[in-house]
Image (cartoon, rainbow over all chains, first blue to last red; front, side, top):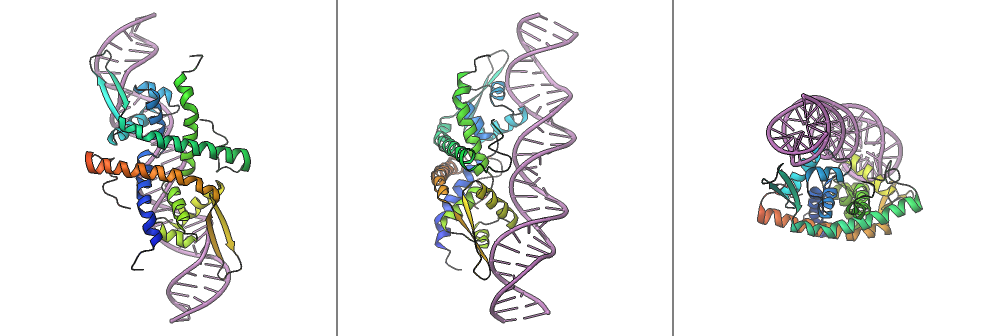
Length: 131
Length: 131
DNA sequence: GTTAGTAGTGAACTAAAGGTTAGTAGTAAC
DNA sequence: GTTACTACTAACCTTTAGTTCACTACTAAC
C-alpha cells in the first residue's frame, strides 16, 4: 500500500480536528462550565453552586484548562474585600455557541429517539438520569 | 430561593441535551469510528486498521455502544466463507454529519489559534501529537 | 470565639476508560 | 503442520478522570 487509500486521505483532516475539539471540550464538565459561564455565572463558588455535582478541585482544574485554551479569562478584583475572583468567558468562547447549539440539538433529538421510540438506551444512561 | 434563578432555567434544557450528546459521542473513539464508518470502512478488521491505535477490545465495545444508540447496523453475511460481518452506518448516523462538521471546524480553528498564535496549549497536547 | 463566606489546594481515594496479551473457532494457503 | 486470515472476547493491567475530606488565610457577622 504505497499510495494511501483515498478514503483515508479524505477523512484524515477531519479526524485530527474532531479529536482536538474533543480533547479540549470533552469530559464530564468542560462544556457545562462554558455554558454556565456564558449564562452569567462568573464567580468560583457561584459556578460551583450552578454546576450541580462538581467539586471545587475539579472546577479549579477545569477552569485552568479552559483558561489555557483561551476560553476563560481569570480576573482578580484585588480592590474588593474579600478579594473576589471572576471567571469571564472570552470573546473566543462565543465561537463555542454553535458547537453547543449543534451538540444540544442532537442530544435532544437523540434522547427523544432513544427514550420515546426505541427504548433501548446505552447501559445505565439517558433514561435514568435527569441531571 | 423558591423561584429558581432564570439563568438556571434558561440553560437547564441545553445542559442535559449537551450532556446526553457527550455521553453518546464522547470519549476517544466514538466519533472516529463514525467517521470511518461513513467514510466507507465497514468490516471489523478493516475498521481496526483504518482507526490507528484502536484495540480490538475497544473497537468491539464501542461498536456495540454505537449499535445500541442506533448509529450502526451490524450485518452478518452468513453465506460467505469465512463468515463476514459488516458494520454499516444507519441513516440516523447521517444526523451526525453536522455535529462532526461543526466540531471539526472548531477543532481546526482552535488548533490554529493555539499552535499558531498563542503557543500555550493544554498540557501535553495539540502541539506534540499529530495523530 | 464560632460560624460563614471569599477562593482555592493537597492527599488519598474510587471509578471509569482504555491498553495488552492471549486465545477461541473455522478456512485456506504454503 | 504452520501460518494467516475471518471476528471477536476474557483476563488482567495501567492510566486518567473524578470524588471526598481536610485545610489555608482573610473578613464579617453573631
